Length: 575
Image (cartoon, rainbow, N blue to C red; front, side):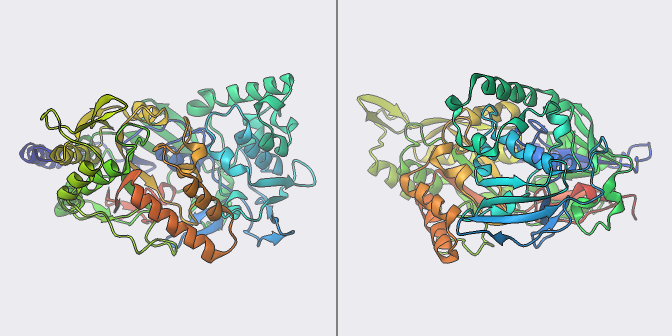
């Protein structure tokens, strides 16, 4: 079986390219930047959301105190005046002194204050908040101190032995307390109690208060309707399945700044994110001018480049693609089966034929540019005979001659039959077809099941899957593997969706997170990568190059940060 019907594909592509000359008669609105997104966000509330597209949009409404800036990926202030040096208080505590920019304010005119940071952290620590991602990180914060809650200057103390202490002092979205907690419920709880008390240690009254806040905070109105922050943009419209519109605030405080930081710029008056899952539909839209910018799969991107009617950018973004495996499933819980699947995938051919060569193979989740990347590991070879040997040695045989391997497990005959969940994206479809075809050659049956993105995310969170193509962003700074790989996150709704964890990997994660010795930490990083490489709890594939096409009247500054551009600094109407 081929990846898909090549002739049918090019007939459609030729048709779309032919009608591309039929431009829209109406003049483009120079104040609106129209960007295509393939998936709809699950939510625009950073503590709750779990999708990459959510993060992309949230940052323009609710920016962090500071963020990684430019292609050098150095932290730069956004809401604070400067990034001050850390102060070592003792052997276990470090402190940072920050001051919010004097003119920085919320939509109601209130200045940003220590109370807002205190609320942001406590909201994430509320035990009734379902998404525990921020909670696991904020456990390393010791205290926030200021002369009064409304003060713009504050001190934040953190555990010295936490590798992301600087990031945890402010590299996260800031919430306005007045809007999300007008009753100041979370002020009644100390940071220490929220971090250390388990659910049974709070009084009945405290339980009721915490649950009341969490229920209101997790309501749909704070997810898709009423979103507030200190950023240049506010949510104007969210039409489910169609578009999300951000509108620039009038008299936004950031316009008075020198705008040395890209996140402090806000050129478009409106940013319209058009939800277009289908690549051909997006191609029609960008060719007739109703869309300004879109990423495309490699083949369509290459065809567009030949026409030379648009501008193009191919930044190397910090992201890797992989196949998520549910290692709790029979068969997939065996290392030999996972390794066999890895050896069965012809990645080199796939990258050339489906990615047009616009990808680089990876051996694990660490970006090759990092000093702690394990250079001794090489990508798995394409070797069907090795796959068959691995499966045979693990006891898998085709006893009934139906083409699917089986074996007796606890007296029951089990077959290597799995479902691979995919969304509507072409890359996922083509990859699934390739895996299905290759696995069939080694006696593993794969059924491809297509689902809408929201339903797919739900199944992944609830562990209702066998295999699924996926991608993940890579952190600009030091990498903390805790969220994705620690045993404490293996259960729903934890973010270790593969379910793989051992005492050894947990110990290495602890060293990575707490060691102040760079050599010791880097060695732990490399040992951890070696274990993932050997165990293959994910089938590590490749790091793709972004393939961005945009209109000729746009000025775009490509960046290595996902998605490869900052929409807030895109200028439109230029020639």
